[in-house]
Amino acid sequence: MIRVAITEDHPEMREALRMLLSLSGDIQLVSETDNGQEAVDCAKRIQPDVLIMAINMPGVDGFEATKQIADLSSVRHINGRRNGENRGTKRLSMLKMD
Image 1 (cartoon, rainbow, N blue to C red):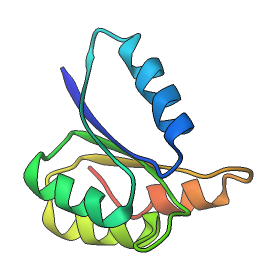
Image 2 (tube, rainbow, N blue to C red):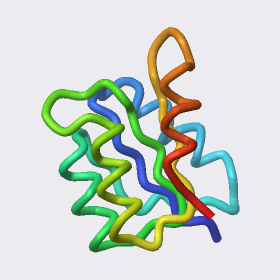
Image 3 (cartoon, helix red, strand yellow):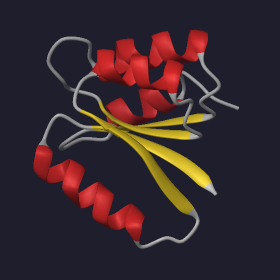
Image 4 (tube, one colour):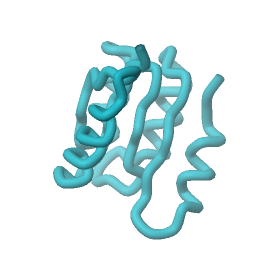
């Protein structure tokens, strides 16, 4: 079972991701948060295998949250999500994991 957490500040996108993940029998959604600081706290506490995170969020953004998570947790992969261009996703994916 792959344990997945979602960090997304747009409720509609969070709902869409939740519905998409529910289609797989191999994925367990273990947390939903709406900002980068909550993502860091979640990674410390829950330690999901995968974290799907928005990049542009108020407060602690996805880049900063990823840097903090990479330093302290056992999350194996973080996938950044950004509206429009995907340049941010490439940059975020390089920060961690394996």
